[in-house]
Image (cartoon, rainbow over all chains, first blue to last red):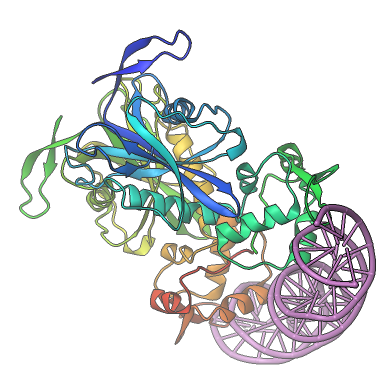
Length: 239
Length: 239
DNA sequence: GCAAAAGTGTTCGTGTTACACCCATGT
DNA sequence: ACATGGGTGTAACACGAACACTTTTGC
């Protein structure tokens, strides 16, 4: 099968062979104003015209699936360095109505401040949805999204991936709100502070918030190098 | 693409359409004499003749990938109810030398007592290997196996899946040895007992070991219904 | 001064660790 | 008697939950 692509260097439209019967679909998560959100695409063409779904696409014959997922996200959002992880393959024989297509699910975490939506040439619109306001999606995309969320909630408890949803500089309260939203729990502020600070994962930037109508909080950043130095075994972020 | 299969009801050889460029490979784990083992297959045909690899096969056009994995294991081991979970898809464009093939990795846990190896018609031999004595495998199968082990080690800490590797009836020491082997840790016997028993996951069978040259230990079984009743959130098996 | 959120201190109870010890059984 | 593994008791300690309290800043 041959599909059209925009060549990333020359900007020209090129035709390339893609894998048949295999696609990629990706749940892209963002975090804003204390709410976890996911980026959905409104399809402009084909049988699912007008309906919302996860962004997705084809895998070129000569690229790995991870690279295909990175390329798709770059085409869609302009971001090339984001947190991206494969979930699993979804392969119900009836999941796609026009034939047997297996899709490989991915999920990505992005810092919304870095982000710039570009509606691609097969998508008429892209929009952030809060995760408790997700509409009916095409095919099995609700299932993929539910699985993504479930996976995210598990993953965030064993690895410091939550930081990928926050801006470079954040306060401890921002971080706590993120954990509260993702895990669906209420946390105690003093205890959360102590727990996170004791892990020594954060760098104190010696800066404070600006323009807030209360005592300004210290700003921190997460340093992945510190994390790697401290342990490869992983921390426990059970809350 | 069309492949030959043995029909499971009639026993006759039938031809069925399978998905092109997608396969399944499965790491099957067993536990015996305190050691974690994996079942490998020696390929009888094709370019990988004589080499060892993970058991695998094709996905029929009208079956889900999970069903395909169950069918493969049933064909190979005769067991239909075992613990089986998808890992993820492996899709390096060069992973398979004769063309672009994506494989979907699975891992299974079996009770070796129930087990009966049948070398299938594409496999000349099947053999259990201890996980620290794995040879060089075909294609990317070492990578898939390493990933499986890593996944198993993580999963066993959050869900009671280890029991799938033990016989129906086991002693607490057997269970402890299993955790020690999988997690690679030394555990304190008294503390392990208390921790597991406090979880109330085990049923005391009111039976004891037979024919042991020391005080006979109580036998227990794991009851998945109890587990479901106690919590859907999962236990913590950190050791 | 008051509101709002930052940040510190302290208590209390629970869970984990480490290790000493006794029990039952076969040789 | 003793070796082997089964099984119990307990003291010391670390940790997390709960909550009272002080600090900083803008209005």
